[in-house]
Image (spheres, rainbow, N blue to C red):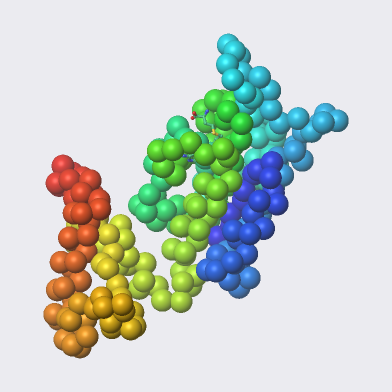
Length: 236
Ligand code: SAH
């Protein structure tokens, strides 16, 4: 799978994509990441990508032309498996279900906005989806793009050592028809500063451990994310 990122700060991605699971997957050729500098598609001396908003208001917006030219030159003949995503606080919420859906695509091109955002014709006529990573405003789409690449890449086959680990993690236990958090986990030592790990995890009784984990995941979901349980009830 290939990820393209279109940004005015290409150097930004040196860090996030060189470490851990994503870095290793790229090195092994399981995923490909191409960072494009939006200014390469400008034609004036100052390589201008932004302009003032019509109707007045604060700040500057990305002009449409460099973005359209960039996408049209990266994919001169855009195929259905090549999806363009605009990172935007006004987008639909990105979550694990969206990550799963996107992980089936051939190529993604992520557009990172800056300043006050992007001329709306980009959302209307260039991109397949507008995605937000949460209900807060970032100063740029680069961090959001890195979040999406990370969450999608780790779902591709071969990227994680143990493919089973994505089946049971938070937001993924669709087998039960419930969106749940992962259960609490403990490692050694069994006693740390007087706090002991739950006895059941030490006794090797796998049926009991499974039951304890299901209950603990449920309790933690109810405590930290009751909205997930309510969603299921209203949908179901
Ligand atoms: N004026 C806009 C915010 C612009 S922030 C508004 O109020 O909606 C500048 C850029 O940061 C955006 O173009 C977008 O690419 C990125 N960004 C900000 N918040 C984001 C979020 N929650 N998810 C994804 N991208 C975001």
